Amino acid sequence: MTVSTIRRLQSWVDETAALTRPARVVWCDGGEDENRALIEGMLGDGTLHALEESAWPGCYLHRSHPSDVARTEHLTFICSRDRAEAGPLNNWMAPAEAKAKVGALFEGSMRGRTLYVVPYLLGPPGSPFSRVGVEITDSPYVVASMRIMTRLGRAALDALEGGADFVPGLHSLGDLDPARRFICHFPEERLIWSIGSGYGGNALLGKKCFALRIAGVMARDEGWLAEHMLIIGVEDPTGKTTYIAAAFPSGCGKTNLSMLEPPPSQEGWKVWTVGDDIAWLRFGADGTLRAVNPEAGFFGIAPGTSRSTNPNMMETIRRNTIFTNVGVTPDRRPRWEGDGEPLPPRALDWQGKECTPASGTPLAHPNSRFTAPLIQCPRLSPRWTDPEGVPISAILFGGRRARLTPLVMEAFDWRHGTFLGASLASETTAAATGHVGTVRRDPMAMLPFCGYHMGDYFGHWLEMGGRSKRLPKIFSVNWFRKDASGRVIWPGYRENMRVLRWIVERLRGEADAVETPVGNVPPATAIDTSGLELRPGALEDLLAVSRDDWIREHEELGAFFEKLADRLPAGIRAEHDALRHRLG
Ligand code: GTP
Ligand code: SPV
Ligand code: MN
View 1 (cartoon, rainbow, N blue to C red):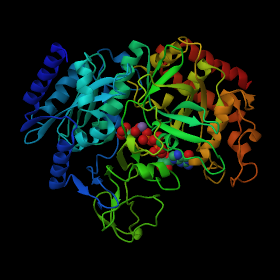
View 2 (cartoon, rainbow, N blue to C red; view 1 turned 60 degrees about the vertical axis):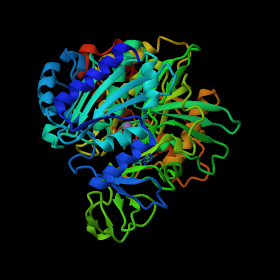
View 3 (cartoon, protein in one colour; view 1 turned 180 degrees about the horizontal axis):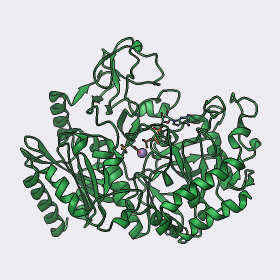
């Protein structure tokens, strides 16, 4: 650590302690003893509950406050000096106002509690991609979670000693009242302040706050990308691996796709997990776009996870996992809807209340999650810590669309692909508080995570496309198209392998496509449906491009882009016009 970095860290900790008045200050090293002490403390005060030790070794249940179960986007702010920098799609607060208003809430907020100093590394040790963060928090649950989600302790200190700088993030539970909850980002200072929530992306500041909102600003300034993307290696039967990154909005299937176990009909194909939520990408010396996963753990959605939908995740969470807001049986086994077993006759629900199948209330919260180390994933890519990153050949954008977007289509080129990403929309899910199931525009799945003006962000994507001659191809996917009776047509989950296969074959110039006004779509014959029970005509419906629907979409997109008009890049405007022209 350079002298000035040590001084800066020490004085930030001192100032914070003077402001928040904790009973004690603990510097975390991420070691075993420290973790055991944290867990003992939480078992003692009821923050954690032990699960059945023989079936679930090292696993615990945490129940968050019932008003604190998901990210709260309306309480999340970008505090840039100039309001215009945050853009019209972010909440904005002037830095001075945020410092005064939120600073007042931090005053004495840690009284009687411990202030933990948590140094962590995002990205593989020794990688030019990697960045150091230090989170100050008064929540032992946050420390235990950060220990799983990041490289806590030594790796971060080594990087600091090697001369790295760090991003400070201050977090306090406060009183957990949503009226006094704020998640503030100061992009110019590279600083995060979060108070009043102990949950997920609001409180684990290495995740969305740093790895996307602050890192996104760094990436813009330094010429790389920080994206809400999974990363996988798709291995074909000859052993050749193609790396793919995919951006889907929260709750739309990234974790599931990242751990896909191909069905028996797709013999010889394998999917290797590199990351399930966030990707940092930059061009390598050879011109390929390289990706690393800045995280070291999964913070995945429990409901719907079962042996049949995601066997690799079920294996991953069998030990050393923290479950948050799931149900629990009298013999202390974690349970959730869609875990593949019949609902238990008696259990405690996510709030710790008695519940039976007749109660009519959910056992697990729809946004209940597990926090588990990546190294426990049976299909973890051997290259997940590659300091140079894996070379990305394809980028996928996908969302939940009951109509409109086909199962899969290929963009014409990088600019058109950027436009497809900018056009992404999806039905909202329980991952954020608010109404579930309404279609909203979520460009590149980054609406809640872009730390600056979305128009500039599109511009940055277009500019990145000019930096290499070896750009990945861009695709759009939609697992969620519905039939007239409202049922999802595509079986999804492991069967998505069939779509990945078309994409890989397409990259190699081996698969057919039909050019449509919206992109290149496979003919129904190009997707292998052997062993699938699809009604006749289902695949044609999944791949259909309706001109009327797309004309309406084009208009809606126009209205959306209008909001960004002051900074909408010409390239996006040109693509929007070209789409109208192709639609005739
Ligand atoms: P975040 O962690 O919030 O970013 O979500 P995510 O994008 O990782 O989504 P995840 O894989 O956890 O899936 C979210 C929900 O979508 C779960 O309820 C899944 O069961 C469901 N889901 C995932 N993949 C598919 C699919 O291929 N088809 C269908 N119908 N549902 C899916
Ligand atoms: C998401 O909402 O996209 C998540 C969960 O991955 S959280 O960590 O809460 O952001
Ligand atoms: Mn996510």
